[in-house]
Amino acid sequence: MYTVLIFIVFILVISIRQVNQYERGVRFMLGKFSSLVNPGWRLVIPVIQTMRKVDIRTKAVEVPYQDAITKDNVSCKINAVIYYRIADAAKSVIEVENVWNAVSQLAQTTMRNIAGELTLDELLSERDQASARIKELIATHTTSWGVEVLGVELKDIALPEEMKRTIGKQAEAEREKRAVIINSEGEVIAADNLSKAAQILATNPGAMHLRTLNTINDVGSMDGNTILFAVPLEVLKAFDRWNQTKKSE
Image 1 (tube, rainbow, N blue to C red):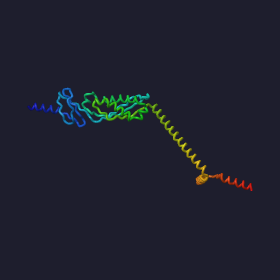
Image 2: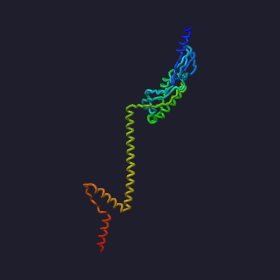
Image 3: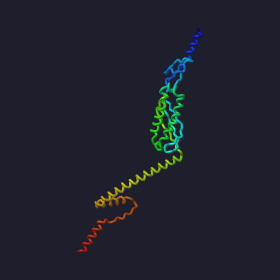
Image 4: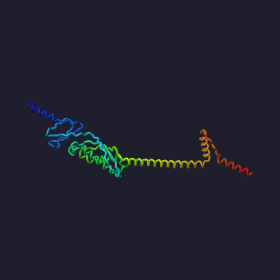
């Protein structure tokens, strides 16, 4: 009697399985899927039943650098980080042998394909769109595996050294171009302002006198300057009219 009780207790002890809060259990009966096991202590009858625990926490997996060729035939290396989790534990066990490896391999292939659809400029300037496209394609395949893709982030795009130098020269040329344009626009504005100022001074003789006196005052405030003051043209004309009047008398 005691032997039977000891045997039953032994069977119960070895049949107990603990499923943690961040796990789900996939139980099989005689090799067939039986049920999904929630967290807690659960009984799994030896020989007849088996159970496989699946971690349902979010995973951040780094995809190693992949050699890719862009749409404009530029070679580069790209890598990314994929965030995903198991949404259906049963499918992740039944539908695919190694879900983590399958997702990683799918991500590598998808990254190379997306890089081939974009030019280098698009790949560098539109990372968010490229990441969203990669996520969309991966999710299309992984849904049947019970995997939910939460996000894909392109980490780095490594270019050959000669391409880096070419891009640097292009950026420098663009900066020089903008500097020349800004400088020429400034000269146009300055010339326009000078033209307006000249018109104002020409139509207002008094304004010219005031400008002359203002300039003399500014120059005279500096030490060691010699000022040669030219007699205004109006004064010379006045003397000329006076001389003509004298001659006519």
